[in-house]
Amino acid sequence: MQWQECNSLWDATRAAGALSERFLCGGARAVNLAELDRKTSLGGKAGALRGRSVLIRTRDLLASALAMIELDGMVRRMVLCPPDLNTEGLRYVAAAVETDAIVGDGTISEDLSGLGTFVRCGTELEPCAGKREERLASEWVLLTSGTTGTPKIVVHTLQTLGMAVDSNIALEGRRPVWSTFFDIRRYGGLCVFLRALMGGDSMVLSSVVEPAASFLERAGACGVTHMSGTPSHWRRTFMSPTARRISPSYLRMSGEIADQAILDRLRDFYQAKVDHAFASTEAGVGFVVNDGRAGFPAAWAGTRQGETDIKVEDGVLRLRSRRNALRYIGYESHVLGPDGYVDTGDLVELRGDRYYYLGRQDGTINVGGSKIHPEEVEAVLQMHPKVRMALARARKNSITGGLVSAEVVLDKDPGSSQERVKLQDELLHFCAERLSRYQVPAAIRIVPELPLATSGKIVRRGE
Amino acid sequence: MSIRSTVLSEFESVAEQQNIKLAPLDDDLTLLSSGLDSLCLAVVVARLEDKLGVDPFSAPADQGRLPNTVGDFVQMYEEAVSRQAYR
Image (cartoon, rainbow over all chains, first blue to last red; front, side, top):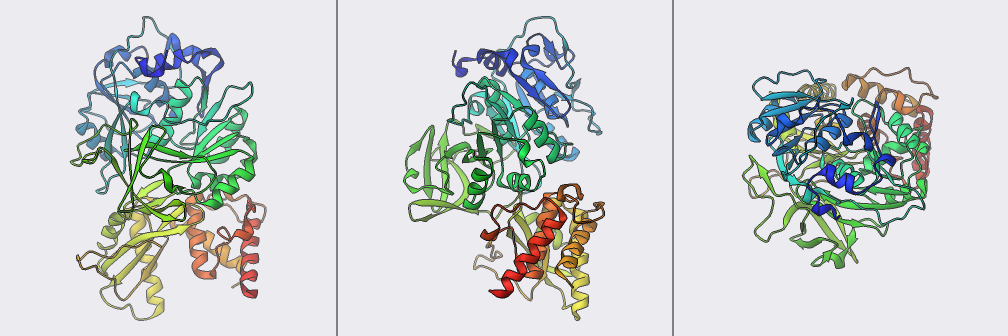
């Protein structure tokens, strides 16, 4: 049976075969997939959630994974909450998606009153009577960061998410074990998770509470063969004393610009096949570049590669494929443009026979895979009584790819250089109290003025 | 200030700003057990670039060099600064 014909994630997982030879390894324990056939992680209460709009809210990735397997095909809508979603964000999302139930492991202390039925989940399995009934085409709802500070809510289905990742390498006599540094409650990680299950493989999940060094040890012990992450994840891995604990055959980078240095370094370090992919929550996986070079072939523009139609218009990459998200919830703009393509907002530049990525059209700064909107940082700096105007922009960084750096125009000159340093320090603390760690500028420069474009907007230009 | 003390004082100031308890810095301490995560190290690298004018992590000469410990990290900066002086 083809995966497209399966009724649910569990159906497809089972159809891929060899359940007893496959596993899902979480931070605290591993589960053999054969166990899942007649066991539940929801206390057997999945039936109570039939046809509902459910938020999955756990800290542990395995707990979320087991809930997804049990609920797909059963619920109308399943919202995957990433661990950094705060309670305010959760309430916003719950209202927008018309939540009537929450599945949680109770590890996040917050008030969930008024959000519907609470069903406890976890990583412990218990026997479960009754046959699974999975008939609904559940909506898989992902959250991504929006400009205003509230999350953007993006709707996918198993059909748009399924088998979006592949490796085109053959392992001799071994069943692939996938892993990823990404959280499976976000697009990049979710695709790897679904690929492992639906493609007949195993998977090692990362953990929110586990240091990178022990995650690598665990992944190595599980015999990871295929692994994905951002260039920043890999740069961090190189600094870990446990980097050699894994010996993958296939490595894949996405979520940030992969430059030639990291591609070469990764290939040499692990003697592995290294690909990089273009993907976003809205566009899905666009394409995979497997020639080991940064950027992508210029000849791809205007053609179909695999399942994706690729266009470059006004220097911006546009993609159309079955992996595109269906729509947003609670957000007025459309996922697809009038031409049926997703506007990725990623700028590319033609140099020789390749297109190279330049960064985001809207100036979004990518700090180790976290999208930062400069407007939010500027708004905070401009709240400070001594700041008249602020500009936040990307600064290249060899560890996290990018960092935020800011320039401010003051009300009046602080006078001595001592006073300037004192004020810079004060502004950094001011930001730290009001912004997430990734948003706080690495440095704040005091400048006499900031250029404005004829539109009256501040001139944004990254390095 | 020596390169070493410039580097170490940047570790301390970033840890203080991020409210992170820094382990006592000696040469054998691995970077990842210092308490600083990759975001902190990124900020350290950016500030050192402003102060010393070098970023040894982006220099092609250091391809393949992987600082595991605080000692490696300091040494990378010492070498990068001296290379720059002869340029």
